[in-house]
Figure 1 (cartoon, rainbow, N blue to C red):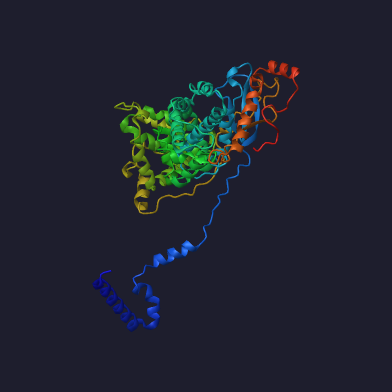
Figure 2 (figure 1 turned 90 degrees about the horizontal axis):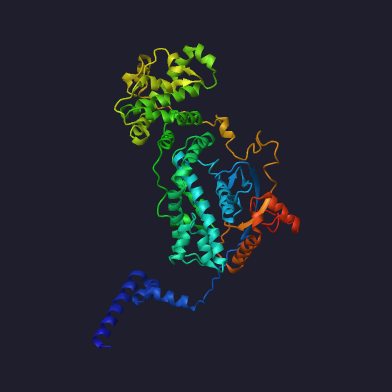
Length: 543
């Protein structure tokens, strides 16, 4: 080392030592020695860590208790074919059995599809959720999408275990699963029994979403709309809850331990129907939260009439639709004789309803927003013929025109104060600075008995078929892949063997036992030893 450089370093060391001695004394010198010597504390710590023995961390494999699930189902003998092969309702998976109809034979992917509806229902989203009507509507779609995905993943296991993989591709490529098996055929996707890579996960998630919206949405939309009033009846009108909605989405899409929702490029984006938009927007209106289920049903029933109004009369139509619905709600306990003979009660009730409405700023916002809804749901006429007559039709209740029972009834075209009656105008003027009407939401019983009988399982044997054999069978059992456990996220040889063996056992069951030919099934059991549960190893059902 150059002597000049060495001399400079020694001089620096002396100066630092003198500084520490004068400032901190001998203790400071001891503590500051590393700095005075120009040492880096990190190097000392690094040397210390090097003396430690290496610790080997062992990751305990995820235990899959039941890769195969034995589930219970019932068989319902139908006397007229429907579009549904199986269904999940009221906690039960039910197979529709149509005599001599080959399209109703038992298929494992369909069983898994319905079992996944059971999984999703365990979240309580139909009975206990506090989300907006539109979010509930989207969850109903997510429910169907994920049930389809579970069915496709079942077919994936069938492909993985098959020696003749081309036969499996041919079996499914023209079905709703075609997008997936065509991708396998084109070698865009390479399924692996011991690992599902991110590419395949993303392809499946976005593929099933696109497939369902393109193929099934228009078919399901009417029944999905019918679910909204029933949801409001059970749960009332709730504001949007994005975080809770995402939790439900994650629960639905977690199949076999993989949360496929993480691979979705976007949430469901659909063009909202006028009916759905109205119901969803009603959740933000304070004065519409009382008896919400009745209001929603009434609005839904009158929706077709909105097409009879021209563009400039939208607000008048919507305003009177909502006011008349609230009026009917207040009077629903009264019969038609009472409504006809007590105009003073009708008038007082109407004024009470209008008093609540005119004080509620959220109602004004609702009208302004809904006045600019999709033109397709309204007439594009320049003028509404017989406007007053069509508006008064909203007020007909129990065959009584309530508008004719109201003293000095004035056709309301807008919520501007000068359109109100004199009494209401004075009330509005003096109460304009008070707080809005914020009545508490309450739970109400089902209004429409038809909704109670919505389930196809209820009253299975009607009067036309009462003399025929019992429609609903006793419990039956079938083994299926258990996607409620992490069989996809943490697959292993043992779990795969169990699933493959189960699928082989199902395939080995004679086709006649999966068919809907009672006579042939009876003949088969006469020639062969009877097995009580041909599709399951036991009757010890997990669910």
